[in-house]
Length: 198
Image (tube, rainbow, N blue to C red; front, side):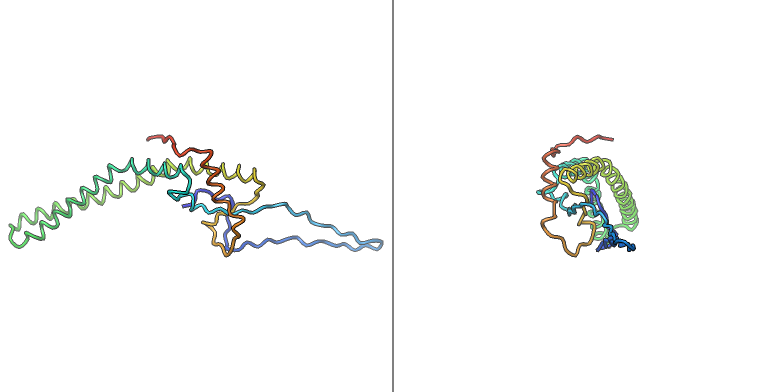
């Protein structure tokens, strides 16, 4: 998952085309015109590192903990239902040769109903989790984007490429700002974060 893309390349290699120097010939003299090149500095960042639980962006891990705690009751409910399904399945298997056929049918109907309920609860929980995750993490994504822009401007960086999103053939370690930026962001943004509840 990438939080920020300051610069995005659609191919593994970007080709920089430079306008050629034009030379105009005149009878009395030859005047050459040069093209002014922008003063640019490229840096690499690997946004996958933002998610590292130990060395990544602290607020990410704090928010992830909040999100998981919010959905823990639903997870526990589904686990309990799974346990009931497993128990009932084993009970049917163990008694179907000796139990009354109508009892087995009733248990199978109950099992089918429980399986349908588990599927529905799972789909609902997944949809709710994804919606809540977007609500919680969108402000962090925006903060990281603003911080990356401020960091780039303060350090004279004109282009930042996210190596986690672009296939890279080679990039020198000297242009990798990932660790420096994470330290910069964590220093300005404490791990504790308030979350708005729905």
